[in-house]
Length: 191
Image 1: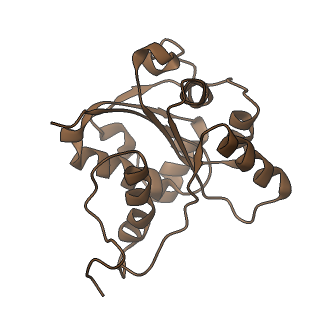
Image 2: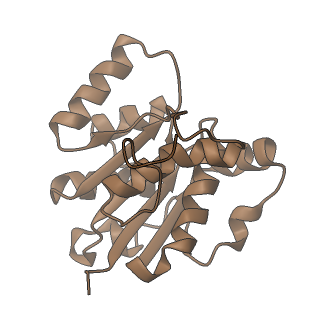
C-alpha cells in the first residue's frame, strides 16, 4: 500500500474561493490516500468564501482546522512530518511574505517549514496581471524549491460548470502533491 499523505492546506485571502472549495471537496473524495489534513484560513479567506460562494460551508469539512496564530499546530514544525503544503488561493501579499521568510502566521510558517525541510510547497496564485515584484517573488520561491501553479484553468476537458473549471487546476495541484488523481489527461481519450 502506498504511503498516506499528510497535507497542509492554507487558504489565502485573494479572490478564488471556488478553488479552495473544490480542493477541499477533492480531498474528501481522496481520504483513503490521506493520513492527515490540516487547514488554515486567513480572515480574508473566510470573508471571500462567504462573499463569493454565499455560505460558510468551509465549516463542514472533516479536516482539522487551525487558527492563523496557532503555532502549536503540528505542521508548524518539521518534526510532524507533513510532506506537502498547498496554499490555494495564494494572494501576492502572502506570496511576498513567504518569499522573504516572514513567518507571521501559521500559513507562512507552514510554507517556511516545507521549504526548510525540502518538502513540497505548492502555491496557487489567482491574481493577474503580475508585476515585477510578483515575478521576482515567484522566482525566489521556485529557487527555494517551491512550485508555483497559477490558477489558470484548462479547457480541453470541456468543463461545463465553475466547479469543473476549477477542478482543472485543483486536479493538477493534487497530482503535483503526489496523490493519485482521476482526471482528464491529454492524449488519453476524451475529445
